[in-house]
Length: 411
Image (cartoon, rainbow, N blue to C red; front, side, top):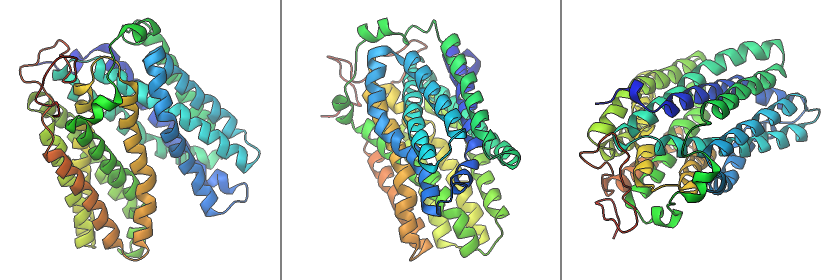
């Protein structure tokens, strides 16, 4: 059985790239709303600076997918990182709020190019029996960078409100240079291969129940673990638990610690046993975690709920991406784009919808989020397993391969 060190070199390279991208984003994130308020705007417009990045990621996802099929992952990835880096430098030098907003939006398009191309490359460059571990390591790079970045960001912001943007550009420059240089010999990441490799259409993928389950799980996970957690938990701690903000930080640390501890065991399970059990269990456990906070609105329920959320989210950091990789034959830029978009949609709409419900009841807001995760679990329950038993270290034919049949194919 292969170990993480036996994974293709591209995986290790992309883990490094993911770490520096997440590190830079974590450094700049605490400064964004403060910098926006520096221009004299209200809280709503300050929040829009955060939202515009995710909104433009959604808009840019499908173009990124088409460009991948035309030019290859390496070119699209490096270009995307470059766009975010340049826009970050210019945002740090912005003289008006609208300049800052525009540049953050442009950065969102570049971020979509990076995310879709990296996902496409990482799941297509590994054989089926290593795909879960590849996803786990990649998500681990984001997790570590995402934990480290905000700590440094708080310190850097105290020195200069503009400095985090320039440091973010520096981490992106390193990440982009690494991608260009270290992936230059990658056989599936150039324009020549893009013109000759087989493709999986988005229509074919959407007819596959397992792909639909991966989209639903990715959407629900982002809605709960990223959107609702980030938007409601800080308010819940003050309004309902009547605790100081430090308990928000402790709660987030619980989620991150459990999530990180779950990634590699979940990845090994996904490669040995299958993706479907993790897909189903991740949605159920995350839903139970959110539900625990709604049912037991006290400190005990808070920590238990966030621990369960971290565990369930760790499972969902591995399984859906591995499922997508299993069903793609050759190139499938729009297929990966739709998968990436499902996460961004959850991140954008989760805080808005749950926040509106929370105006009446926090329990109802958390309960509705648990319901969304439960609906995703129901979709996963009817999805076939995509891991082909007896897989070897060699790449395996896709369930959507032309002329082939598979238990994952829909009727």
